Amino acid sequence: MDRDNKIAVLVDAENVSEKYAEDLLDEVTNYGVPTYKRVYGDWTKPQLTKWKDSLLTYSFTPIQQYSYTTGKNASDSAMIIDAMDILYSGRVNGFCLVTSDSDFTRLAMRLREAGMLVLGMGEKKTPQPFIKACEKFIYLEVLKKTEEKSEEKDETPKKSKKTEDNKVEVSVAPLKKVRAVIRDIVNSIGNEDGWAYLADVGNNLSKRMPDFDTRNYGFTKLIDLVSTLSGFEISRIPVGDGGKVNKILIKIK
Image (cartoon, rainbow, N blue to C red; front, side):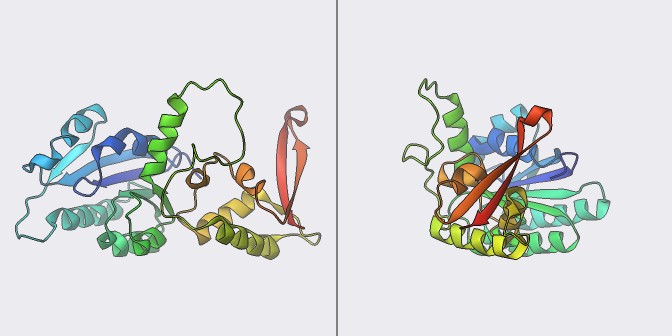
């Protein structure tokens, strides 16, 4: 992923809690540079009061949108219109749509049609249509859990296997399905001897399953997760830096 990507971060404040503000911005920096940072909502409503501190702390621009009709979310329309204006400005390479609302599914599809990188972020209640419309979808609960874990002072050695303590409860595909998809990918891209680079497998896996994230299963790296799955053989090829850096390959047993 190009870390120089310019990304517009658009947040549906009426659908996402302010407690994720720092986490979502930190995550965006893994994919590029947040340029536009806008948060949409009716700021006259008391339920958005908690967002106001985050606006100042993280330099978000609040976009006011009054609710003209009961039962209709005017903020959705404002966010969609802004996204299209930003798209046509030609100043960004991608968008991060932070919402748990399926109403943004068509927007995500349209932005991808225009060649944009589209990241989706939302809570575990996010409907599948929006998740599938994004190039990459990340559960906000996972980001919060990751931060909490990094702050813990634990002197015990780290384990690569999944434990109940680091498992995040989100609605994700079972490991059985992940294993089946990985097998299919290895079959498709493996060389004559059946070996495939794990990095290539990971890229294909994200394309097939936009909400796939090793953190959903309690792991930080794909190799740690794959090592727990049966039916695969793993090989490491030392390259560069005196053999300290490895290229990792995977093969079906």
